[in-house]
Image (cartoon, rainbow, N blue to C red; front, top):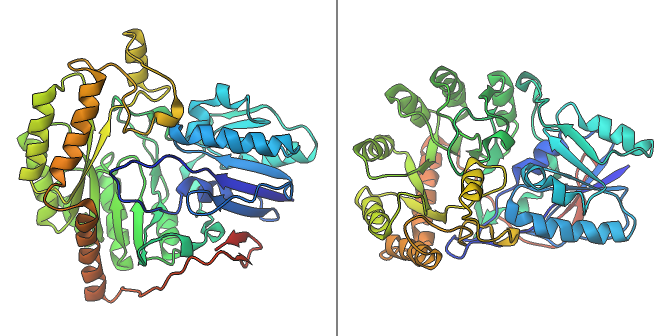
Length: 425
């Protein structure tokens, strides 16, 4: 049996430096597919999709709301040829009612332990319209390594520089931040993986640079410290979402190879200033993630916030516009207040205004979004600031003997991996 596993392209944000990371959802899903099934993986962000009937089943892995319209389009083309299509991933769950119009089946939840059931049903000609495992979350102690052999690493570099591999040490999030779809990101409970299995997975990744895509590494200080201690001998260099603002945790993060963190910044408080300072004192870079358009934001607030970011010397800043994603608490609030402007999902990229702000017009918020990017990067463009972060990690790798020189090309040839997976390079 053969499955075409597809990760659709999506509209890119104007101000972001364009590069592509190997997607995490597809490689985690692929690990749950029985070994005797051939997987042909396409990441449409870096390669063209060969839309032919030469497959038994198409699996659409969709992470982002702005990705879902393209996923539907691809699915419609396959189904017109008589090829069945199943959808999975975060965006498929957020939009599953609409997705059923474009799919033979939709999988809700995490595929660990469950996808064999789908294959058995498919082989019997009894594929269900919906597989609902949303509340049947797998025991994280049983989650193994992602199946990265489906990836062609030649396609994931930026100007010849090796990009990071994505990995997760936990699932779920106990926090309930307003814009987030937390229940659809692994549930509202912190679910740590077995640390020995995480370390085994890290050891098996032929890349010294990693990105922990866990929702937050600030949920359980004792577990996080145990993880960081176990990582120290690996000498990996890594990025993550927030780390707990605790002296011992931050010391261990630096010792374990933390390269930089994505840190949400909501205000100009001394707490925020001190947290950024603590990270930078340990040689950990900071990329601030700043959401614009909260109800307390007026024009003066946003301009003062940008001044604050420059003052605390952030390494990078990523500005986004508050976006009412389906099934988020923000969405429910704005719907109740009749403030949703449209449901054009392709424009839910976080650089478009899809709601009525509380203290300004949608046009003014859009103007301030551009102001924020252009003011923060007025003296030094994002590409150069990013290059400075890469120079720091190269220096660290050379200092501890882990630097690996790699040469990349973008030849468009087909080859087959050792496990029989067909990969385009």
